[in-house]
Image (cartoon, rainbow over all chains, first blue to last red; front, side):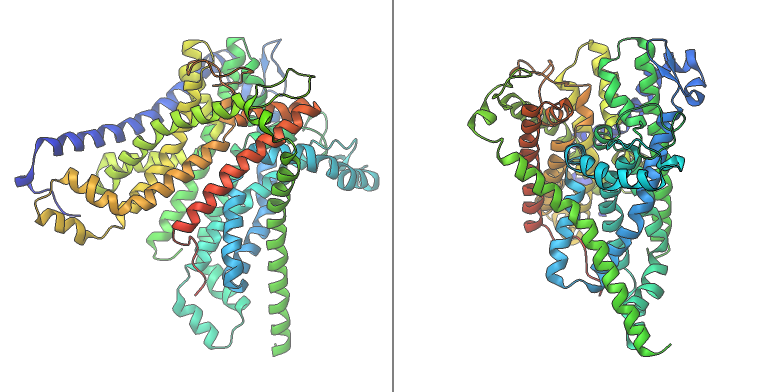
Amino acid sequence: MPRRNSRFFNLQDSVFKYLLIGVSAFVVLLFITLFYMLIDRSFPSISINGLSTLTGTVWNSAAGIFGAVPAIAGTLFSAVIATLFAIPISLGVAIYFTEYAPSRIKSVLSLFIDLLAAIPSVIYGIWGLWVISPLIKIYVQQPIVGAIGFIPIFAGPAYGLSIFLASMILTIMVIPIISSLSIELLGGTPPSLREGLISLGATKWETVRHVGIPFARLGIFSAIILGLGRALGETMAVTMVIGNSYLWPFETSSLFAPATTITSKIASELYEATSTLHIASLIELALILLVITLLINTVARLIINRTIKRGYY
Amino acid sequence: MDILSRRGRERLIKYICLLLTVLAVVPLLWIIGEVVYNGVSAINLEFLTALPAPFGESGGGIGNAILGTLIINAMASLFGIPVGILTGMYLSEYDRTSRLGSAVRTVIESLSGVPSIIFGIFAYSLIVLTVRHYTAIAAAFALGLMMIPLIAKATEESMKIVSNDIREAAIALGVPKWVRTTKIVFSIAKGGILTGCLLAFARISGETAPLLFTSLFSFYWPIGIDQPMASLQVLIYNYAMSGFQNWVIKAWGASLLLVIIVVSINVIVRRFAKPKYKAGV
């Protein structure tokens, strides 16, 4: 980076410099304001309800009772299940892409992965609601309920819209995130080691198994965490397919029952909320979500930075 | 272990990976197929230009939502693109080490992981609750905020890879730093910056959660940027959830328009940008 030469100092130069500093400081200020506003606007709820928002299981806006446990549980459960299902599929995609795919398929496949990430969430929602939900109700949920419905988590009746369907849609939405990062990580392993193994007669799978995965391990772990962060904050698709019921997980534990998440609670109630306490409680939910996702993303980023410092992914 | 079983395992792994890849891609093709199949029948001149028909009546269009999305996106871009580019310039050309620089970097990284609904809540808390009515300005603010990290990162990365020889040549010729940054380095990096802006635009075109409690929805033509405004995204959500056949078909039609925007931007960007993933070796 060349240093500024004071001989060429002029007014325009310093005006431009302070413009850039001003804009950048403005971005930082916006982020601080974001935190401040969420805390400020949820303050009525924090001061009146205290911790009962975090421990209560009843949400009755008419009675002024706002317990968020079912929403938090729904958020964590659907996101974790989705991420767990997305891991093997994404790794399969990444290994196929880096090792086996012919170059012509590669360019199509990387476009498809980008598009999976780019399709708006509301379109996953309309697809889940009108196409997948009826199919899954008849061909997956009803047979399972019929066969092993005596187990509480598979109990009927089978609603199409359910936490099961929400987790499924989330799985599809998380796959492009984990797989695109994993492709970059597996593609970035040291060529000398790979070539060494290949020259010893190792198969492609053995190369991935003994070079690719060990080198990319931490990076893949952080990709998984980033995927989890995406799943936790996903709003529209989840709101449209989860059924928005507060009965799960306490009144019923069935995966085929409708449930709710933090995001679906906010999306389906905020625009019709009128009382200050109701609005404040919903904003407090948003604050909880913000803290969870920031923590998760920070952890992932720290891991990525550490692995980059070590010289490989 | 003999060679045959290793070869056998290799083939097995290959087919498992292929199967998983197909499994990952099928939903994409299925979604696009359904959107095209259901959406094409909805699209005609009336659909694109007319106001919505009242609940329960046939006909009508989504002209106001198309216009609304364009207005909101334009306002968001007016806010997000300059702020994003200037922030990226600052990070790349003026500040690679200082405290403000690392604070900006941390904020940009954090902002890009914040769920979109949080931006909606922020705009709602800051603007809607203050002026006490729903307004499209709040929606544009939320979406513009989402563009900033994407564009700042694209700008920083495109400008950083410009060779230092070029900066040094500019210094040797006595070019002031701001001219060097805005004319020379910027013009070399502008392909990458444009790509970043286009992808950010595609991204906000589909974002729905930040609009739900900011611009809300309207059944009329936009009458002012400080008023509630219809948008394609909220229309899809409202109409799809309504369960009323005529509206659901309109929602599919609107989905088709969004998919066309998103897919075409991604395909265009790909033609000009360098390939994103490198092959193994």
